[in-house]
Image 1 (cartoon, rainbow, N blue to C red):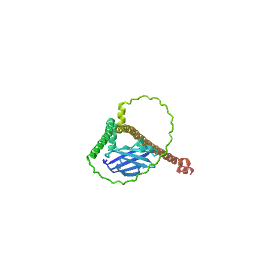
Image 2 (cartoon, rainbow, N blue to C red):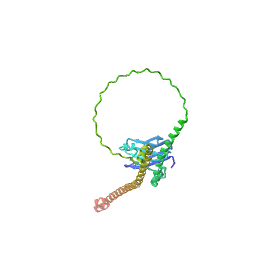
Image 3 (cartoon, rainbow, N blue to C red):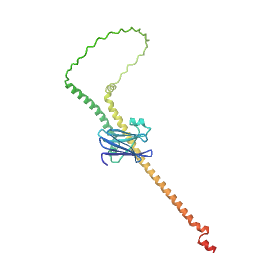
Image 4 (cartoon, one colour):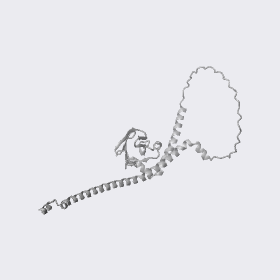
Length: 275
């Protein structure tokens, strides 16, 4: 298989879904159900969404470098789950493909995957801070010219007299003395640096969810394969049984045809007896 072609497939609700993705940056998506092309789309989005009113939708994920990650199917009644990117059923990548190798790495080395994703989130935060610092440094080194913009002389507006409003005697509510609660220092630090901490926490949580998702798909894949084999064996046994029944019917009809002249007396023997 070419590195620029990725194929996913899976049988869901007795329908065979087949997805073929071609290309690296601008990709062509061809989604077929039971051998019939449902949708063909070309996009460079790393979170491509293929939608069909009859068959539901597919969410196809790629990394920032264009490496295929997974293709997830959502039924027509899973609109909210499809929009949020949660739930659904993952299609199975072709053995030996880049998506299959990635899935196997996630299953075999979950801690390393979680660490890489968490460090990626931290790197994004540090990169944003460093980028902002570089931009601020460049702006401070650039001397902008002073430009005098003439402003027109506007006339003075008259003061409008405001009426004296009566004061409202609000009742005084006795509030109880609340205890003095001391917040731990680490809570204060997290609250003050929350905008830098939450991307790292989010990356870790998403990594854990992806690991559980991959394990669940790996557990269901052998069950699905076994189910497909059982269905094929059942269909073959039904065909064999039908063939046996039709052969038995044909043998019974042949035996009945052979016995008819002996019982009816119209054959040559009966003619000789009549003579």
